[in-house]
Length: 253
Image (cartoon, rainbow, N blue to C red; front, side):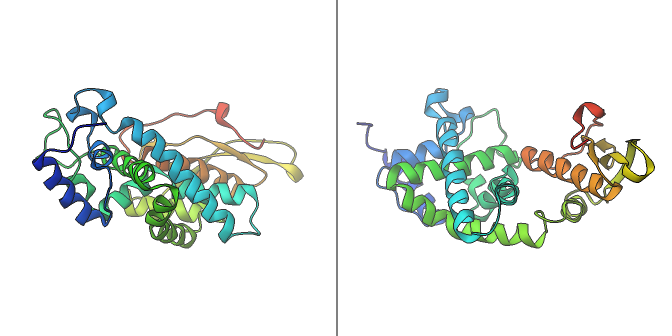
């Protein structure tokens, strides 16, 4: 059995519980979830393992919710929404709602005078999900996540990610980078009556992977989807390098 929390740790946990709206039976789960590797004695004392588990718990809860809410949707449609809902960006936004950055314990290597990297707070949120799951079970984790997931699904649907990737990419690009995406035709093949087009999306100086389509419009949608997937996986919103992509990334030729 782990040692009882110190009075200082107990006071910290009480503050965290009030801010999160969750009371833990085993405070050590909460303490571990909020301990970044830079502030831990070893990697096993940090929230890295909890982050790994929390990612799976989040994915499971979202999949169940989508499966129940959209009984007529096929696998591809469900996967598209799920990818957006469980993204690093979503976890970062949820972490912001609870001001998680001010609770995560970091080491001296990370300056407290500066804003924590998005990845640190996003990972901390996933670790928190795992802590709730281990402390109180799947039902409690699902109850904690449900309002967050439902709100995020509505945002994704309004952004038309499932049906209009170009519209979604334009909104995200203008919101996060103040720029409008452009699309370039890199190649085309086939006779006039059955051409295929290779298109890549670009934001600023950054070119994303190219994609094939049976029309320019279809290729642009595929290219926008690839760009969205990359931005969601990165979760950082930085465009500081030019990525040259070739037909090796082509899809749907």
